[in-house]
Image (spheres, each protein chain N blue to C red):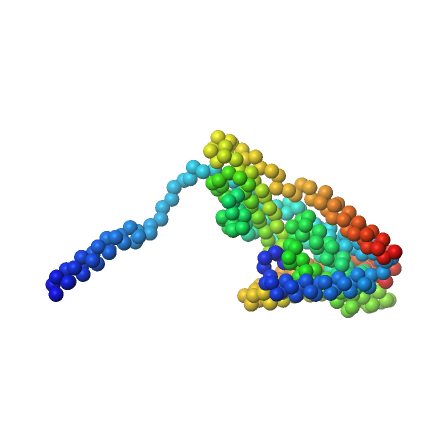
Length: 150
Length: 199
């Protein structure tokens, strides 16, 4: 009986020792040396897209977001790319407005030797061209329908 | 008022497309050839109105012009809204392609209802004040109706969205007031300058 108790206690002690590392769910922090990409999102009117849902898609997985969050009060959002390729950041509001920024992250940028990110313009400056294109398409469709009716 | 892509359930999306396709077919059938250019003009105005932001307190919203569309186009409103929303989705990323049917229905149906409810009163009304009141009511009600339909589509997708419906309607009240005023001025101007546009 005593032998069994000793064996049992030894087992429990062994288990407790082996779980010691798992129990230690502490937290800590350190400053990362990795370079972050900070973006600003705005509407065509210049108003910032404040507190809007933001999703980051890595070049490795275009279906599931690598990071989700919200822009800050001034429409800013930052993330830390860790692989080279085209990263996509999609910001949208509850009314259906959506802005997609595509960024070509180079190995040089990740390596830290390149100071500035070669970012392609997120779009927005060509809004009038797109508006004109839209109106033109509408009138062309109307012309097409008109010709078919006659 | 656009509903974002990926929010509505499959069955609600299908219902939205069914309603829109029925409206578009009916609209195309009823549109007379001499009114096609007018339809394109109003569709363009609706397409561009989304770019006009109206500041209201700390936030801003954009015009929809649902009621003027309904009052001017009548049954042709569904095709006009559909084309404009399609181009908004493709060129400005407003809404989306899968949700296009639901968005078309949520905006074109209130416009059609505006035409049915207020079209005659606005067109044939003689009293200036009476026409102004009806125009304002048409503009405001069209926005509230659109918000209610969008809310209903969200509620049918998930009951958890029902709480957001109330907020959606409340959030659209300032826009309803603005649209009411815009419709009032537009109708008054059209009745004076181009009354045939409302016929």
